Each structure stands twice: as C-alpha cells, then as structure tokens.
Image (cartoon, rainbow, N blue to C red; front, side, top):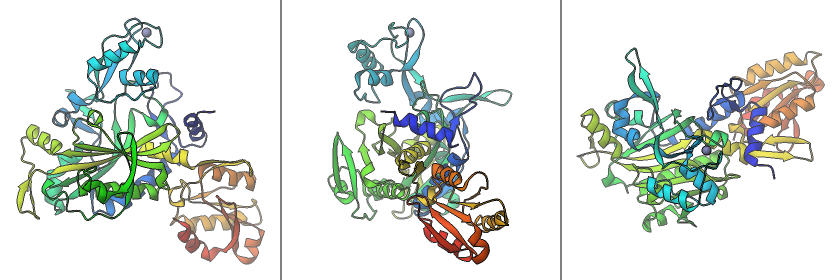
Length: 483
Ligand SMILES: [Zn+2]
C-alpha cells in the first residue's frame, strides 16, 4: 500500500499547497516549507475559525509579539537549560540522530519522552542499536538544545528565535493586565512562527524547524479554578492506554481532570475541531503520564486526531501552574502578582495553555478530506465550504459572445464578500476538475442561457449537482451555503 503521508505530500506539492523552501538550491536545509497560494489560504481559514471559536467566543486578548527575544527571556523560561532532545553521534562516521527516535524505529515501541541520558544508553545497548549508515557504535547520549541562537546588532548580543510563541505573552502580561481592564481568569492568544533546531526533521510538515503555532494562555487564580460551569459534553479520554467516553463533569469528579477550568477549555477545543469538519470518532484527549510531560507542566492533555501516521498530536494543553510568571518575575526583578477582583487578594496567576500546531492541523485536514472519486475520474478535497482555499470559482463557458464580460462582473460583485477565483482557460470539464482538486465547493458558469435570462449554473463539488440561479440571488444563496 502506498504510504498515505507521501501521497498527501505529493498532492500538496502538485496543487500548490506547500513545497520545500529554496528547493532549487543545493544548500537547502530539511524542515523548512513555503506555503503556496492554496496552503496559505487554507492556513488563514484555520486561524480565522480558531480566532472565532476560541479567542472571540471567550473574550480573549490577542497580541502579535516578536519572534526574536533576548537571552534573559529564555533563561527565565527554562528553554536554554531544559528545551532539549537526546542526541547520539556515530563514533566512526559522525552521523547524528535523536536517540528516542531511533530506538522507537528499531524496537517499534513507544519511548517515553523524558528519559535520562543513562536510560537511553541502556536501551541502545540492550537492543544492540548501531549506526544505520555504517553499522558502528554510537557515543553516549548527549543533550541537544533546540533553540536557534542569533547575534543582535554590531555587538552581536545573544538572543534567540522563539521556540514557542508564548514567551511574549508572559513578558507582555503586566502591560496587558494594566491596559485591558480584564480580571482573572482571562486568556491571551497569539499566532505566529516558531523555530526549533530539530536534529532530524521528518515526515515533512509534521516535524519541521520553522512552523506556525496558535497559542492561548489562560491566566487564573488557582483558588477559583473550579468556578467554571460545565456542560454535559462527553469527550474521548485516553488514559494509560484505555479509552473512556465520559462527560467532563464526571471526569472532574473522578479526578481524571484536575479542574473545571481545564474541562471547560477541552470542550471548547473539541468544538473548534468539529467546526473544522473533524468528527468525534477521529479525535481523543490523551493524558500524558508524568514521565512524558513537558518540564513546566502540572497536567498535560494532548489533543490527537487519527491519521494514517497514527494518532497525531495537534494541540498540547498544559497546566503550567505559576511556573512562567515566577520565572519571569525572578529574572526581570518585577512583581508579577495582581489583585483578583473576585477574592480581593493579590495572587501570582497560574496559567493553562492550549498550544496548537497549525501546520499539523492543516496536514490532518488535507488527509481527512482527500477523496478519490473513481466513478467520475477525479480527486477532490471535501473541505467544509468556509475552510476551502477558494470558496467559489467563476467561469465563462466559452470565451465569446460576451460571456467573459458577464462572468467578470459576477466575480467583482462576489469577490467583495467571498474568496473567489476567475478562470477562463481550458475546457469547462478541466476547469471543474482543477477546482475539485483544491477543494473548491462551488463553481458558477456563465453560459448561453445567462445572456437570455440572467441565470447561471451553480455546481456543487461533492455530489456534482447543478442548479440554475438568478445572478441577483447568487450572493444570498452562497451566504447560506457558507457553513
Ligand atoms: Zn556511522
């Protein structure tokens, strides 16, 4: 069977979703991708829905912070000491690879993320793992820091590209708290690029060195962490290799989830992914065991979606306690505690984080929506209409009898409100196929009848149905279809 990951990558390359950055240069590096027009549009639609379903719905503040931050920020955050992967180097040919990755590949067993260097060495010895290039032995496991260092200005002052986008949320917190008139609990959100010097980037978009995050940090008083009213919503929980489908209320009661606050946001996360068109049976929340949690987390839930690569982590949800504000307060010598209006007392806020990997969400959506329609000799992406890179394509049937002029008028009118695309090249059948291939849900064709009665053909991607619609009714009709 053809590897589905490779197939989707192939389709993405062909149809202008994304491609390796600087692909024609011999010194291009792995783990960097450029988004093409369709990938960029899809990415923006994902972010737009994220903003609507999470940020706006919850009355959060959104910022756009810098990608380069001074050294002290990452001393405070712990990234310079703890944001590491285990590195092994071949004694003979100097080939380098992530220890946990190679052990996992060879043993076909999950390797916990946070083992000690000694434990990796033992596993390598026990499983007789040798260099895949030259069969020689590996050196002892070492630490590889994932941060990209930079030098700022003529003095080349030490700074770093951010390894996660949240640090500027923490450094901006005092000013946002002062200027936004928000009270605890409230969220600060941000989308943008982050950078990790991965030892061995792989699986194309799934592990890259430059990628897009959409992060939310909810600041709260731990004393009122249970003040959230919960819905009866049921979620699929995956705990210690068992799946349980229970309501979030029950999960809190059984102490599966630490607090109502976390349960509230897990529900929102599920609802957001449903808006993207992912069904419940394709999603789960996996509770990380202590040995797998990030260094700052009190409780971690990975939101995962079922793809051909297995369950793929799309969003990491971390209870960061007061780790961040404590660290930043200590290094910047500022008091970061605030008055909670509800209790009237000063408190150093705790943080719950929802850290989404946009590129992974995009990949999952490509895979889950890709269809081969053998009967009609076409392939398509069955994206929800509001997610599709192009919402409606407009064609003149032929390039004569004034049809292009009418089609362009319709394009100009609809383009005010929708993502439109105009195309007059090639046969009408080929133009339809091209739009199917990038997932355009609707096509409008101006034909001979249009010139007589001012109606057009509206064609539907999924069932290939065609109906006649008056030009004057198009905007309203399309608005109803934008779900
Ligand atoms: Zn070697």
